[in-house]
Image 1: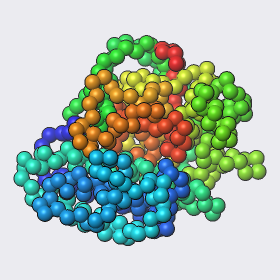
Image 2: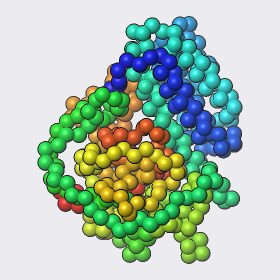
Image 3: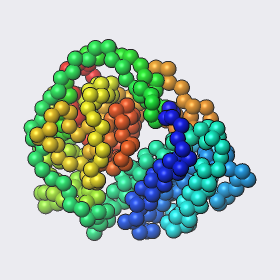
Image 4: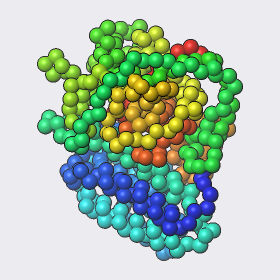
Amino acid sequence: MTSQAVEHPSDVVCRYDVVRGDTERLAEPLSPEDQTVQSMPDVSPTKWHRAHVTWFFETFVLSENEPDFAPFHDKYWFLFNSYYEAIGPRYSRPMRGVITRPGAHDVGDYRRNVDDRMRDLITTVDGGTLEKIRPIIELGFHHEQQHQELLLMDIKHVLSLNPIQPKYTDAPLVTGTAGRLGWQEYSGGFVEMGHAGGSFSFDNELPRHRLWLEPYRLSDRLVTNGEWLEFMADGGYERPALWLSDGWAKITTEGWRAPFYWQEIDGVWVEHTLHGTYPVDPNLPVCHVSHYEADAFASWAGKRLPTEAEWENAAAGEPVVEPSGALHPKPADPSASGLKQLYGECWQWTSSSYLPYPGFHPAAGAIGEYNGKFMSSQMVLRGSCAFTPRGHARNSYRNFFPPGARWPLTGLRLADGGQPR
Ligand SMILES: [Fe+2]
């Protein structure tokens, strides 16, 4: 992980309070019952997210630096460890939803206790120690932001299973006209990719390295629900020739016939969102499709998915747009130029397997487990989504999920030319 120049302790505390406060604001509309449910193994209860990000600071910062450290609770290290083997055994992930104690309010007490101790530590350690621990505190900020996004993806699934169709927010969906899909051309050549330094990045974005790209094109906006309906009407889910073998096996086994949150009621497709359940709007980006579905759509369209290098190279010339606050992807702006909807709408599937960059070395110790050990059987997604917190997205960011995952807020952009798949 790379980090920035020297920072005053009060600035570190200020950033700490902002990130921690954002998590609590996201949990605010949710009752203790909402916060307890685990609707499937991939989904974690809201209160688990709130506690786990707190455990991260307690385990990786306080336990190593606090004089006379004593844990807030002697079993939380077991309950709220996610996947760190070096820390020790942990509670079964698919069973997180059966934990009723600590309750949501108790988790609030845990958070306040760790917050007080973190503020004390940051403002009382000497300058040298603060500089030494600042990279792990910084990692804790970005880790918590990742969980803010997951908290929303997870509660979306929890609420989707409720027939009374609860809303997370009363704000209306943003609608509009997407306009026709256009193309942007790139000459490729000898390019560099990876994080360039000077600010925070995760270790998986490093090292920056060179590679060759053939000329290619990218669609200037995301694929829409309207285009997805055409794919469905043309037998998209029924033609094995369009599908990767694993994808075809998945959709036939699971009976997939539409995106994850679509449901056909009396001949009308409706979509569950955090803003409520609405008829599918053809102008909005299609979302909650797996890599398998995205790839099949691209084949049907006579195109392909971009590689992550193509995406990063093309997006390097575009601004990183901060999220609008809407909790569902918005239509593309037909009057905008360049590549639209790169950030803040849907994470975009690429055709790239999640692999280490040439020369990648995970950090020593438990924190080296953050990214590197997941570099198998997952695909890279680029950009960011409507749930991504402000300040979290960047051009070199590598998100990753298994190719069959549909509960994350994922969509797709098409590519053409260049490297055939
Ligand atoms: Fe985590």
